[in-house]
Length: 153
Image 1 (spheres, one colour):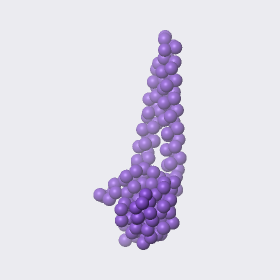
Image 2 (tube, helix red, strand yellow):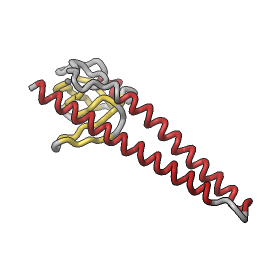
Image 3 (cartoon, one colour):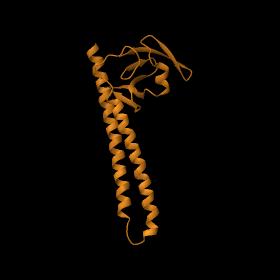
Image 4 (spheres, one colour):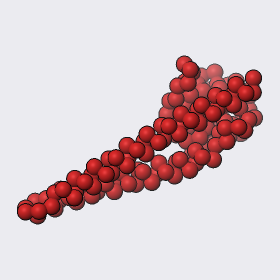
């Protein structure tokens, strides 16, 4: 049984890494496109294109900031140990409740594995704060709904 649980945790971690890498690639590609656009529009009508170039540079900087944030997020995700069994809700835990299932790592939204849905949430999210430190059998309230924790690992 434990091996199956750790396999699911490993799959959730792999899927999280995949999603994060896709987001990082998209931000890097968008940053490069904005930089290329800024570089291409040099020449004759300098004044007219100066504001365009500035707009491209602002856009490039925005994507660079987004990429930096994603790199930091990846650093957090690397701290998740897929071989550790969690007995309480903490970083790296897979949490099953009567209402929804969660993977505690970084905020990535819904992840589907073999037909089961999990919400990848961060340790900073309000719902995590409501369930942190709790174990199977415990309940917590979030947004006026009571959640009963069925299983944690």
